[in-house]
Image 1 (cartoon, helix red, strand yellow):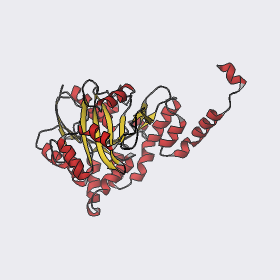
Image 2 (cartoon, rainbow, N blue to C red):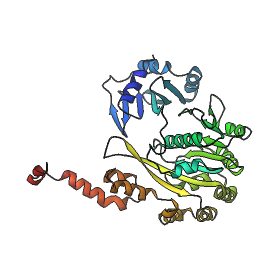
Image 3 (tube, rainbow, N blue to C red):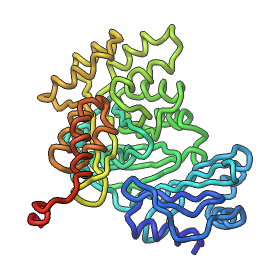
Length: 369
């Protein structure tokens, strides 16, 4: 067993999400959103090389030496898979590992709205999951693909860098391709996918103009395309995609996007206060006619107010969902204010919470216990 697998065992036992290794520092785990140091000596360059060389494929090591960073996956039998990123930093080498559970949680188990199951059953169009790094986008997408796998009889192709969740074909035929191992790039794999008779195409990330162009083309030609974008709201997602293109083609892209976009789900993870773990807060925008019109006319700044008035259609703003979680006592007011778009809306709650925590214990308090 590779020596590094001991760290993965500890991460798994503590229900953590990430392992961080860095020359000159002690190993750290991210548990429920916060970093914790392990009782271990600081890692030396020789220690790091011994740990990493044992599990890094030779081709990836060569690429790392050339480029300074590389992605790959590593499996620990009986525990989980891990998405790895190696990188050079000022003190030497660093590495970050994200745990990918062997069991794919369902939409219900994740506490996500049933609407995501409906989106997984769409015959065509573009569905985007957005949010910052570590916000659970891959987990949500895996739940949607898993639902489609159980309830459809179609061909699913995933294009990932690297492959994270491994899906066992059930109702669907599933082919999972890894960038760098099975294909040169997202764009190359997407171009090939259009000739491979897919019904659903999952693109791990829409990173560049060529990938976005091909994803839109796939959605326009009768495929359901699921992908992720590193943005924090539905409106900013539209703007980010359009701005990738040259200015003289942006009007055409807005039209194409307005016709193909089925939904944008923006999510963040917040630390729970009612029990250990984290919970997702979602912003949901659906491609209804009014939204399509706002996209076409370059009025994305009106999308937030439209979402606030369209709850009956299944849409919601991120702040409204954060407020729901706060009202239910699931998250703290401080975290709510930190992650909200309109921080002023939550400022009073956060101030009240801070004042309560700082209030000295009184005799009445003793009686309550």
